Length: 340
Image (cartoon, rainbow, N blue to C red; front, top):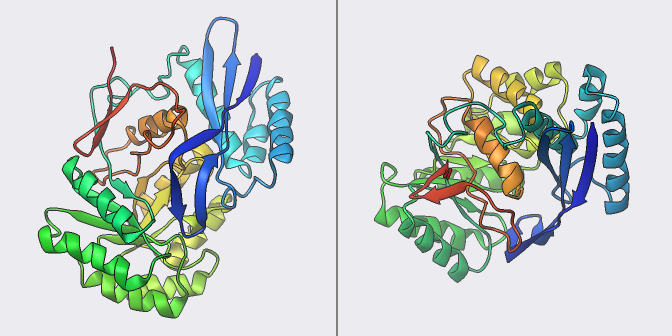
């Protein structure tokens, strides 16, 4: 196999605000694997401060090079198991190998979505910012035909954030517009209980990660008593062993889990999370970890493997000034592959 790596930093059109800070750039690498006849392509993408395997640029590039060197000797179960602790690298390699296996045409999964015959419902994402900026985004997403809106909360004054949600709910019932919020662990337990009650009064569909990950007992209590359904996201990061995954799901018993292959064990790890969640009647949806169109296409095709009616978090292809070309198209709250 011939393997190449290209650093491909992504530049946000508008600074992206979360409770962890504001991002203007995101580190990404494109990996290509060739067998002399076909070439597979994948993306290794990290979020600084969130991806557990990323500590510095130089160290991470050396880590990628190490694993790509091992890959030259062939893919095997030992390498797969080792890479579980490097989910972004695993995702990129798995993607490129799947593409190579299927002829190098960016068909990662042979399903209706990949062939442009099926679309996926997605949510419209509202980034943190000033009240005016967030209100402008909400108006735009509604005008674009989204029926599920996801809003980042946790950095503005709480009453201002609730007022924005209330302004939507005054115009649209929960049957007309589904509202999700993502706190990225912004609240302590006491404040989370207050927030969960206020969100319930606004018929909010769910809240992602109301408190920081790693507080299993507190999260269990919140999930048990919350009037607003809770979705786990960061809570799943760093859980690689199947037994530990089962323990987490059965202890916390969340209403939902949210899966990002670059953070939650690559393609294979995500598939395992889905199987374990479905066995326990826990619903799920996928979302990108802000990959370029290369990684986003893979995740969309992976989501197309399942009959999941919940809107996915996959409408992130327009975030960057330098994104790669893609067949992915978003119209009226749906994403599909527009093939020529």
